[in-house]
Length: 215
View 1 (tube, rainbow, N blue to C red):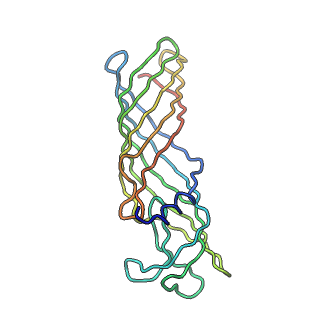
View 2 (cartoon, helix red, strand yellow; view 1 turned 30 degrees about the horizontal axis):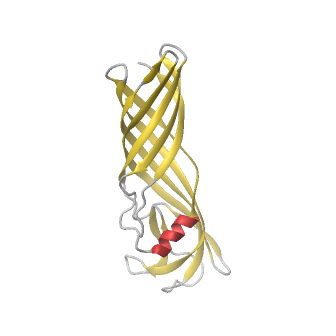
View 3 (spheres, rainbow, N blue to C red; view 1 turned 30 degrees about the vertical axis):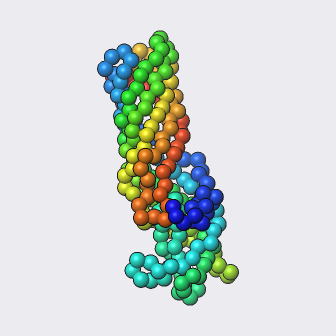
């Protein structure tokens, strides 16, 4: 972003909170070692945003409203208290921001080991589809307080691409079932924002735990 003040504010005010994902991963092996992985995962990301000052601007329809900018998009807010805002007015805003997305990976994998324990590193690409970008904002001035619900942020892209890498560690329980532990890292190749003050490229590290079934 060319707006260094907003960029610095986002970097210092947003804190990622514990999040989760869940889904199904399928692997097709072509020989004893090489295979292709794909699947379907739902991801929920929570971001806490510390109190900050927001200012009133002209929105796209010509009204004056407070502009709230996050790393994933922005929104114009009109609180119910006080007189209508004038250009340059300010409020204090504190927020919890959530992103919901669906991910479809396509990765090449190589299996190592035998008997009960196998280790399978994998790498490839991940298509992320943003299904929700929501924020709950607490607005405060000298004498008023109000909660505003933003159900859809503006400037959030519907699809973005990431590079992905993982290591699947499996311990065989029976001939067809194994316990699976899989550290996963994703690094966005394209931003999740468009026409926003900032371009955001998410990075994430997670740990998947599950049951692997051989069909």
